[in-house]
Length: 526
Image: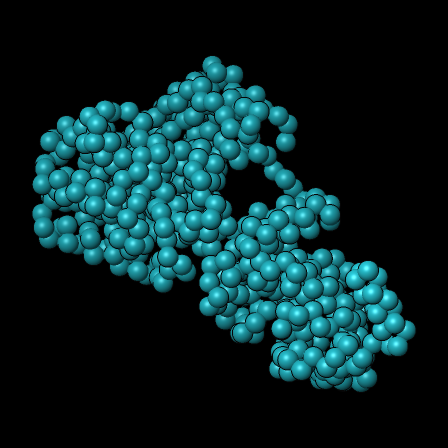
């Protein structure tokens, strides 16, 4: 992508429309030149009607016109306009996008919840020291809550919940001040959604980094309580107890008195109880005591993404270096994984012509072998499933989305359950890719088994096929009993994928190879 001097991003949210105009800096960050916000409440009443209201529709169109003029006045070379849950869900969302194009010649991208979450994580990773920490990054908007569970910058899980501040206000905040029965209903609804959609956490969460107006307002209110100063809340740290105390105070007050609370923007006071309730209940569910406010969020991630540009599909060397870098960041056992990759490649070479495997699939198998243990970063238990999520949400430079999905599925099936159409991620693959995943996972299972002790005892692998039987000959100086045992019990998927009976046997290296190995060892000792 060409270098762009000035960038503009517009985020059309459920509660407000926001613009940021920025100028990239040499260090990969940027300077904000201008910002604008309009609280248009585009999602007001959406839960009941399923449509964007006429008033909010018109207000948002008008706001976009102003923001386009500001961006043009600032000579922004790139304007990116994204819409989130309100436009995504509304029955007249497509009509709104067409109206924006007709009126302002702005093309609106409707981004997915997963994209929202990824932009929020990108923002958090650039603004805060997150490496080596298990964390949750949450972006709370008017229509939805996106949560990323990550180990440093490595994503384990992305979840979108229908817990936006505007949505919940429409559903539950029906009295002023909020009556006890309405508060109980709101609290139960949030807790139920968190339990249903987040489920069991993959690891203990150390810190919650939150973006969106509700997080920012709580940070500003907490800051005013401490030192009596108003201003930006970016980077503010507050405890869960502080957030709960601020919420309790808001629950006692009618709307007009909430509008006067220091740090709380008056235009947000009507939806703030629902927003604060989501923040406090989420922190409670995650078990975190510390919350950090990130005022950047999705818009910040959009600008950073635009500055970084698209890497596209690159050369093989660069692709593999990206795989190695990701494995290192996940603290994989490099020596073990490289040995498994070598054995998997030898198995592939032995089966390629017999099984009509595409030559390009060797690189995907190598990548999967080097990444098969990245799930240990999260937990030993079910690490193959954690690895699938980590890879699916990773940035593997040069690999297409389809290739990343194949690699992730091969790793998913390097142990335990066999590939099944009952598994959503496997079922959504194209038929040819399902067949490919099955074959590559069969090869990887055997390769992993051949280094079960992590001692690199197996030095070579040969395949011999007669009729319906394939013999895997493993070459080692001494009989590798554990590797033989594990390969024999892990060969079922190999046999099923390639329609063959499988035998595994050991043989010593040829005498001349043993002599060469002995000389090399002697030379190394000298």
